[in-house]
Length: 196
Image 1: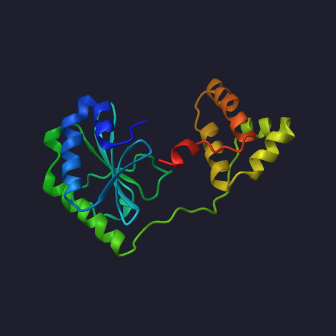
Image 2: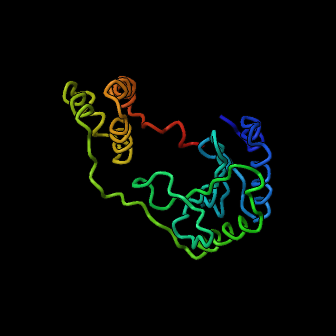
């Protein structure tokens, strides 16, 4: 996992020019540069504003409270419809698509929203829907059920969604085999990323 933005760029040479151009734009905004979740992230007073991520077909800017942006160019996407309320992504398939003035305008609005205290809070009171495969695994072993119930609601939800999101039965079973020891150890599915 990269520890710096330079390391991140080096891991994605096919997108080097685009990543460096976006980095330069974001560095000019006064935001603090860091690496979170293994990717460049730009913060204001410790709050996440925008991140950069390289994928196979594009480079994306992730606005952590992007749903609050006016989006006059209509470029922001909800990459996980039905899952994310606030996060929005702007995709670039090449360096020429990155218009510096437009990117700065979006980032400036995101900074203004943060300074004004505007944010979309996650709904933490939604019930956890445990898929049948996980429910069966919890029913077979009291130790596993007890460990699962002692996890925070957020960690329980992560495990439930991890199993439910698998399309194939074989994948659900494979995921179950991997997570049962983690549950019993009291480890959350994404704990390894929390200290990033």
